[in-house]
Image 1 (tube, helix red, strand yellow):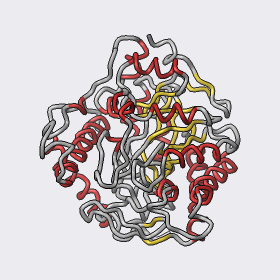
Image 2 (cartoon, one colour):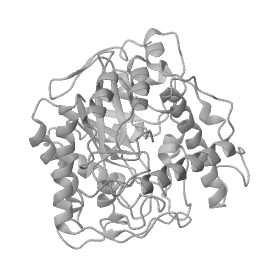
Image 3 (cartoon, helix red, strand yellow):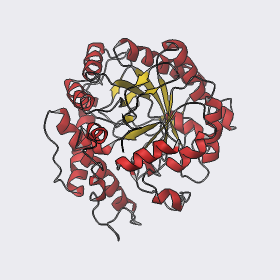
Image 4 (spheres, helix red, strand yellow):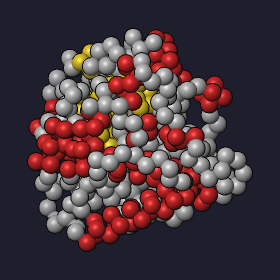
Length: 432
């Protein structure tokens, strides 16, 4: 049953993944107040390395310390921390697996308690209960600077022992927001046509490849669809894939959704803004596998799909079908770090599915499909907070604690986030 899952896979750059399973990126929230890695990163990633996945991808490592996805992000922006990065990389590769740093800029999706004035392609505000400030549109010289920052952070990753990088251009973060006509209303060379909207991403990839050389893996995370009316569509995605074909990409991870339409978490956002998901997609084990099949027809790089995979049989079938080369796993590894090892050994038929229980109610006003946005968000963020709490325990060398409820996890999440934000403000990094 696990014949393909256990097979090595050679990337275009020449690096070989030991098997087809990847611990996908999940934001850790473990940085110190100066946004440096900590021993908790090393403890957590050592456990994941020993858990058997051929590839581990870190959570967001930010190129700009001023604008964070959350207060616990690691940033590489004149704040030191190289020895801490080396310790993280050593721990995360103890089992001979690959460890890739996910490089990102939060863009307009930096919460108000972290930054009052985020940045974006245009001044289009994220509308989620007032939790996000109105972004200011980036000047062209700032875009050019950020392109070089992606490259410099990739060089730092290589020099400190990470074995590859993933450029985050999904889920509504900065590169992703440049791709979307909803959030990118520019009329210069960085907006308008899909060729212009994808220019930031393409230039970041080119600068990164030039900086790290031909033998270092570069992956991209890309939305198959934003699931937002007028946003980055599946047709746009196919055009971007064609533009990326000649850029030496080693692995393209297919995902979808944004904060406003969080399909990546298994939920749908505002009904009035959403585009309908195909019923065939709803019924498949992996959320984005159908989109990967269409992308496969055009892509000249390996593909990875994350989101929804739980059964060994489903993973094996996806690989056998040829639409995907690598299987991404996220939430199951927050409670059982050895899920990959067990799947490969045939001692586990299906990964844990705690997410099915992590709702206040399965139907009605208190459910994830509630018409009350606040109640819907409590379900989303409560479930997310539940997994964050498990990560914290793993990073502290403790076993998971699975008997927490959704509402309690929601409260714990906010206490931890706001506390970290207060420390961040108190211990503000000196200006470079």
